[in-house]
Length: 175
Ligand code: GDP
Ligand code: MG
Image (cartoon, helix red, strand yellow):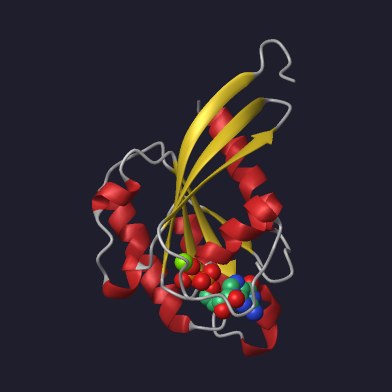
């Protein structure tokens, strides 16, 4: 199923961001195509793999989801060590989660991994009527930080596959 000469990239992907922003939901939407409305804030430590085939490469994501440690500010650097890509998630209906996302980005930048592909994800796009964080604020911060920016809804599925495809493309370029 692989074309000859197609690159295969194995990439550790980590999700960061406040508890309740939809990290687990984004992963489940991407990996299983499902959304759970009354999902527990976390479903426990989770590890998923998913393969995306692009024309330029095949990317195998090793996805690390938190076990909810972010709630107690006890995520250790071990969690994101060796990551090729990081998704930092906030909830457009909560300014607090945007501030926390900024903290996570700073923390990642302190690790000094120049090649890390970073995405800033404004999730819960379907809650537009409760929006506290304007698109422009997110975009501007992402641009200053060398990340790409997108708005998603794990609930409706909007932009979720596109997010992972964009990451895969950037990894294919970087590797
Ligand atoms: P995590 O703590 O960051 O992993 O967040 P979860 O994925 O557990 O989601 C927390 C809550 O937000 C759950 O009740 C989800 O159903 C809900 N949720 C997640 N993504 C969305 C979304 O895009 N829109 C809406 N309306 N709710 C969402
Ligand atoms: Mg979770």
